Length: 315
Image (tube, rainbow, N blue to C red; front, side):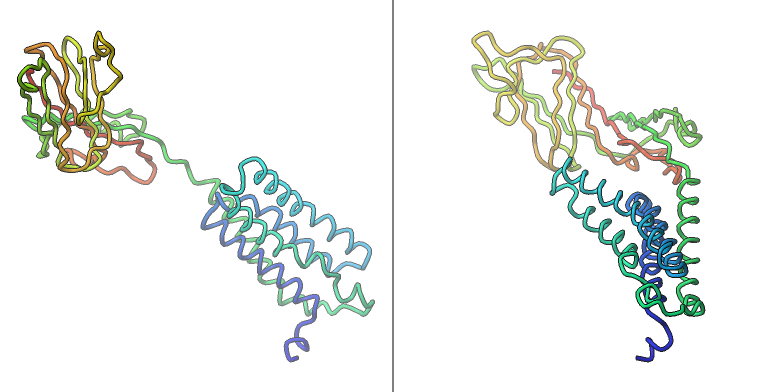
């Protein structure tokens, strides 16, 4: 009762809309990608609420109806997105954005007290929602300007080539940014354990060669490359790489094995040229393992930074 004596229904409606607008403004500052579509409809609803409360009945109705149009457009686009991409992919975002937008515009659907009863308005009652309205609009404008002014991170690709025997390291980078150019060509000596490789005959009565690979790191990726000749009749951990026919499988110059648990031994058997030179390259995505690594600043976005640890083996 005390609140009703101090604040009328018109001011409460306006304050409710401004509170929702303030919430959307805060979300827009914290997560522009999520709330950007709600800013303009919510701002239009907030202005419509204030004007609809101050204006006479007929202009008030026209203003409130016009202010609802951006919210209707927002809900329509969300429903369209739901139909295009399906419930599983967009239901959460649809519910959140729609609820916030409708909360900001809800006061537009209720006639102001003066419009319903014809009683005189008391402009001083509108002073309470004016302050949050100004603050909300200021946050929306400031957050949008800050987001647009912020530069997008520049993508850089970096690779460290490490010799497993000597630790010799050389960095390669796209060199798009100053950080990338300073890293490109940098050399150092890395103390990093390379892939463990053992080569032995597959067994009596077999002309194949058995190659055992072990990594100290999880999720390693192996690439085996022959300097000359080809792999044929390949099996990995006892499973054939391809369906063999009577003439044997098609020859391959390189093999690639992805997703190896730490400590797991990968056993490869294949027909290979005797005495051929093979390079075993283990790829990991932790650039800090290599000597010379310097983390980039916030303006650089790394794209799968790689460290390739190579070891030469004679078959």
